[in-house]
Amino acid sequence: MSILEIIKSRRTIYQFKSKLIPLDLVNHCLEASIWAPNHKMTEPWRFWVIGQETQAKLADIYAENRALKRTERGSDTFDEIYQKAIVKFQAIPQVILVGQVLAQEPVTIQEDYAACSCAIQNFQLAAWDTEIGVQWSTGPIIEDKRTYELLSINSSQLKLIGALYMGFPECVGKSVRQPIERVTTYLA
Image (cartoon, rainbow, N blue to C red):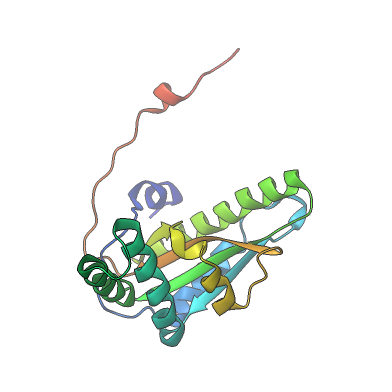
Protein backbone atom coordinates (compact mmCIF):
# COMPACT_ATOMS: atom_id res chain seq x y z
CA MET A 1 0.00 0.00 0.00
CA SER A 2 1.07 3.57 -0.54
CA ILE A 3 1.53 5.78 2.53
CA LEU A 4 -1.73 7.59 1.71
CA GLU A 5 -3.58 4.26 1.49
CA ILE A 6 -2.17 3.20 4.87
CA ILE A 7 -3.19 6.55 6.41
CA LYS A 8 -6.70 6.38 4.95
CA SER A 9 -7.32 2.74 5.85
CA ARG A 10 -5.95 2.83 9.44
CA ARG A 11 -8.59 2.50 12.16
CA THR A 12 -8.58 2.50 15.92
CA ILE A 13 -9.09 -1.10 16.98
CA TYR A 14 -10.91 -2.06 20.18
CA GLN A 15 -11.36 -5.81 19.70
CA PHE A 16 -8.31 -8.01 19.21
CA LYS A 17 -7.71 -11.64 18.40
CA SER A 18 -5.93 -13.45 21.22
CA LYS A 19 -2.80 -14.01 19.12
CA LEU A 20 0.35 -12.49 20.67
CA ILE A 21 2.39 -9.87 18.81
CA PRO A 22 5.95 -11.04 17.99
CA LEU A 23 8.60 -8.79 19.57
CA ASP A 24 10.19 -8.07 16.19
CA LEU A 25 6.89 -6.49 15.02
CA VAL A 26 6.67 -4.43 18.22
CA ASN A 27 10.25 -3.26 17.63
CA HIS A 28 9.40 -2.45 14.00
CA CYS A 29 6.68 -0.08 15.26
CA LEU A 30 9.01 1.44 17.85
CA GLU A 31 11.64 1.99 15.15
CA ALA A 32 9.09 3.93 13.10
CA SER A 33 8.17 5.94 16.21
CA ILE A 34 11.63 7.31 16.89
CA TRP A 35 11.82 8.80 13.40
CA ALA A 36 9.02 11.26 14.16
CA PRO A 37 9.84 14.92 13.64
CA ASN A 38 10.94 16.70 16.81
CA HIS A 39 12.05 20.30 17.20
CA LYS A 40 15.73 20.67 18.16
CA MET A 41 16.09 16.86 18.14
CA THR A 42 14.88 16.56 21.74
CA GLU A 43 13.68 12.97 21.19
CA PRO A 44 11.28 13.37 24.15
CA TRP A 45 9.51 10.00 23.83
CA ARG A 46 9.97 7.03 26.10
CA PHE A 47 8.34 3.61 25.70
CA TRP A 48 7.56 0.75 28.07
CA VAL A 49 6.82 -2.60 26.43
CA ILE A 50 4.65 -4.32 29.02
CA GLY A 51 5.09 -8.02 29.77
CA GLN A 52 2.46 -10.33 31.27
CA GLU A 53 3.51 -9.81 34.90
CA THR A 54 3.38 -6.02 34.64
CA GLN A 55 0.17 -6.19 32.59
CA ALA A 56 -1.47 -8.12 35.45
CA LYS A 57 -0.49 -5.34 37.87
CA LEU A 58 -1.71 -2.65 35.48
CA ALA A 59 -4.97 -4.57 35.04
CA ASP A 60 -5.73 -3.98 38.72
CA ILE A 61 -5.14 -0.22 38.33
CA TYR A 62 -7.21 -0.16 35.14
CA ALA A 63 -10.08 -2.14 36.66
CA GLU A 64 -10.24 -0.11 39.85
CA ASN A 65 -10.34 3.18 37.92
CA ARG A 66 -13.01 1.82 35.60
CA ALA A 67 -15.19 0.59 38.47
CA LEU A 68 -14.79 3.78 40.54
CA LYS A 69 -15.87 5.83 37.52
CA ARG A 70 -19.25 4.06 37.57
CA THR A 71 -19.96 3.18 41.22
CA GLU A 72 -18.69 3.17 44.80
CA ARG A 73 -16.09 0.78 46.17
CA GLY A 74 -17.55 -2.18 48.06
CA SER A 75 -20.81 -2.40 46.14
CA ASP A 76 -21.85 -5.50 44.19
CA THR A 77 -21.75 -3.37 41.06
CA PHE A 78 -18.15 -2.35 41.80
CA ASP A 79 -17.03 -5.98 42.01
CA GLU A 80 -18.84 -6.89 38.80
CA ILE A 81 -17.37 -3.97 36.83
CA TYR A 82 -13.94 -4.58 38.35
CA GLN A 83 -13.87 -8.26 37.33
CA LYS A 84 -15.04 -7.54 33.77
CA ALA A 85 -12.37 -4.84 33.46
CA ILE A 86 -9.65 -7.21 34.67
CA VAL A 87 -10.63 -9.73 31.99
CA LYS A 88 -10.80 -7.01 29.32
CA PHE A 89 -7.38 -5.57 30.13
CA GLN A 90 -5.71 -8.97 30.43
CA ALA A 91 -7.09 -9.90 26.98
CA ILE A 92 -5.13 -7.11 25.26
CA PRO A 93 -2.34 -8.92 23.38
CA GLN A 94 0.25 -6.16 23.88
CA VAL A 95 0.35 -2.95 25.92
CA ILE A 96 2.90 -0.21 25.31
CA LEU A 97 3.01 2.86 27.54
CA VAL A 98 4.32 6.11 26.08
CA GLY A 99 5.82 8.93 28.07
CA GLN A 100 7.15 12.41 27.40
CA VAL A 101 10.29 13.76 29.03
CA LEU A 102 9.29 17.09 30.58
CA ALA A 103 11.41 20.04 29.49
CA GLN A 104 11.79 23.17 31.60
CA GLU A 105 10.36 25.65 29.09
CA PRO A 106 6.59 25.70 28.35
CA VAL A 107 7.12 26.10 24.60
CA THR A 108 9.44 23.07 24.50
CA ILE A 109 6.91 21.04 26.50
CA GLN A 110 4.27 21.82 23.88
CA GLU A 111 6.64 21.06 20.99
CA ASP A 112 7.66 17.80 22.65
CA TYR A 113 4.04 16.73 23.14
CA ALA A 114 3.47 17.30 19.43
CA ALA A 115 6.59 15.23 18.66
CA CYS A 116 5.38 12.40 20.92
CA SER A 117 2.00 12.49 19.19
CA CYS A 118 3.76 12.19 15.84
CA ALA A 119 5.76 9.24 17.24
CA ILE A 120 2.52 7.54 18.27
CA GLN A 121 1.03 8.13 14.82
CA ASN A 122 4.16 6.65 13.22
CA PHE A 123 3.75 3.66 15.56
CA GLN A 124 0.12 3.20 14.54
CA LEU A 125 0.89 3.46 10.82
CA ALA A 126 3.79 0.99 11.03
CA ALA A 127 1.53 -1.38 12.97
CA TRP A 128 -1.28 -1.04 10.44
CA ASP A 129 1.14 -1.78 7.62
CA THR A 130 1.85 -5.14 9.31
CA GLU A 131 -1.89 -5.81 9.87
CA ILE A 132 -1.74 -4.93 13.58
CA GLY A 133 -4.35 -2.63 15.07
CA VAL A 134 -3.78 -0.08 17.82
CA GLN A 135 -5.93 1.88 20.22
CA TRP A 136 -4.26 4.99 21.69
CA SER A 137 -5.82 5.41 25.11
CA THR A 138 -5.46 8.45 27.35
CA GLY A 139 -7.56 6.92 30.12
CA PRO A 140 -6.99 7.12 33.89
CA ILE A 141 -4.32 4.42 33.93
CA ILE A 142 -1.75 6.93 32.64
CA GLU A 143 -2.67 9.46 35.33
CA ASP A 144 -2.68 7.04 38.26
CA LYS A 145 0.30 7.47 40.61
CA ARG A 146 0.47 3.68 41.03
CA THR A 147 1.33 3.34 37.33
CA TYR A 148 4.21 5.78 37.83
CA GLU A 149 5.37 3.80 40.87
CA LEU A 150 5.13 0.50 39.01
CA LEU A 151 7.30 1.88 36.19
CA SER A 152 9.66 3.76 38.54
CA ILE A 153 8.86 7.08 36.88
CA ASN A 154 9.42 10.45 38.53
CA SER A 155 6.30 12.39 37.48
CA SER A 156 8.13 15.71 37.77
CA GLN A 157 10.50 14.58 35.01
CA LEU A 158 8.29 12.48 32.75
CA LYS A 159 4.57 12.41 31.95
CA LEU A 160 2.76 9.38 30.59
CA ILE A 161 0.75 10.49 27.56
CA GLY A 162 -0.69 7.27 26.22
CA ALA A 163 -1.33 3.59 26.52
CA LEU A 164 -1.14 1.81 23.19
CA TYR A 165 -3.26 -1.34 23.13
CA MET A 166 -2.29 -3.46 20.16
CA GLY A 167 -3.21 -6.72 18.56
CA PHE A 168 -4.42 -8.36 15.41
CA PRO A 169 -7.88 -6.87 14.69
CA GLU A 170 -10.99 -8.91 15.36
CA CYS A 171 -12.87 -6.60 12.98
CA VAL A 172 -12.20 -3.33 11.18
CA GLY A 173 -14.82 -0.61 10.91
CA LYS A 174 -15.30 1.95 8.19
CA SER A 175 -14.77 5.68 8.45
CA VAL A 176 -15.33 8.77 6.35
CA ARG A 177 -13.86 12.24 6.48
CA GLN A 178 -15.10 15.60 5.32
CA PRO A 179 -13.77 16.73 1.94
CA ILE A 180 -10.65 18.89 2.22
CA GLU A 181 -12.64 21.85 0.84
CA ARG A 182 -14.69 21.93 4.06
CA VAL A 183 -11.69 22.21 6.34
CA THR A 184 -9.28 24.21 4.20
CA THR A 185 -9.08 27.87 3.34
CA TYR A 186 -7.00 28.84 0.33
CA LEU A 187 -5.62 32.37 0.43
CA ALA A 188 -4.11 34.38 -2.41
